[in-house]
Length: 80
Image 1 (cartoon, rainbow, N blue to C red):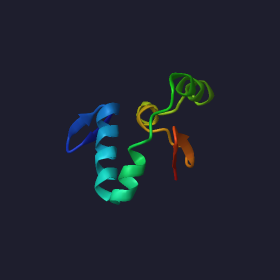
Image 2 (cartoon, rainbow, N blue to C red):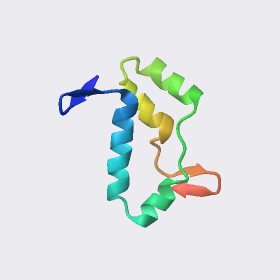
Image 3 (cartoon, rainbow, N blue to C red):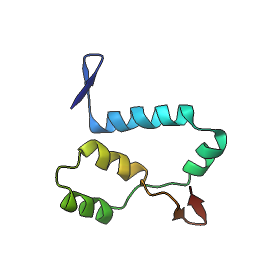
Image 4 (tube, rainbow, N blue to C red):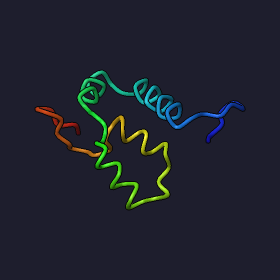
C-alpha cells in the first residue's frame, strides 16, 4: 500500500488519483479520444498476471480501466 500525506491509498485510490491528474493535463481533443477507451478484459489481465506474477496490483487495476495499448481500436474509434 502506498501512503500520501501520511494516509494509505488502496490500488483503486491510486488509479483514481492518476486518472484525475491525467484528465487535468489532457487537451479536450485527447479527453474526447480517451473517452472511447475501455479496460483490458479478464482474460488479458489473467495472462498478464501469469506472465508477470509480481506485477503491482495498482497496474492491473489501471489496465482494467484503460488498456495501455496505443493505436488500439475501440469499436469504430482508434486511440492514438
